Image (cartoon, rainbow, N blue to C red; front, side, top):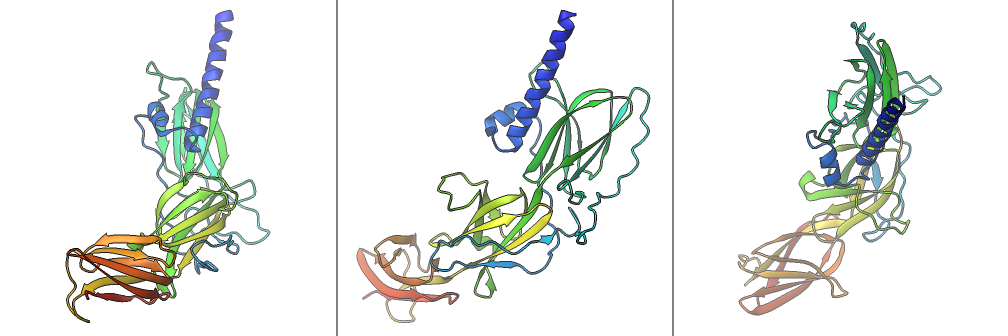
Length: 358
């Protein structure tokens, strides 16, 4: 009897440890090496695919300079199609139709799984990754993954016993231990996730995808804490599924000084489309012997602001640089000689700056 109670206590401790490990891992609290040790034979959850364009975007333009104040977009639109459809005001939120679980075979049970965005929010009908793990480690110390399913409402047949179920939607996840018997066990998970999709503009022109990037940080830019980005490099047009809450975006147009920071709010079951507006232009630098002449090769360039700070350095006959609107000096070095010229950048007006080699 004493041995039996000790074994049961060990199993419960193992279950609790696994739940905590999975929670920490998918919340970003476990380092990648530790994650690799736990799940070395399994890839991480795959974020859902993009969803169709729901409508007009929200413009986030900085009031002045590269650092903008907190700008909260109006209420986002409900996510269309997968992963959720809009619901009328006051109507009860219904989960997607769930197929009747198959009859359990002898000595088998059925895990009938579903997820929704919140207690009173719609069911999630796409983008989910379900994983079922053993509740005890094997001889190597790893917790074996027994099943994986990407359906919205899967019915997973397993022998009776204790399991750990993990579900992920983008960067949002939940984990739970279940005890399955020779019958159907219906388990519903809450994943308070919202969609975020970003693009950049200069004036009325859309910034090409390969010229702009975004980093997403948890919390507000004004809370005074240094932190690593939650997602360091997001391409324009990609959709992220994030836990509902406040985030701030750092948008870089080019690789010089056109940077915009904006606070945004992500709501569960909603898709927030954000348009970040930069006040900048693309400038081509040329060192020429005569006005309108051919650019001289092997020229080293420095672009300096009025305060004397070096904004961008490059080497080439006619390098391109994205600069925030304002005043600058272009300094060109060629064959041991130095030439310079002052110039101004006007928002949305791309152009050339010729420096005469005289």
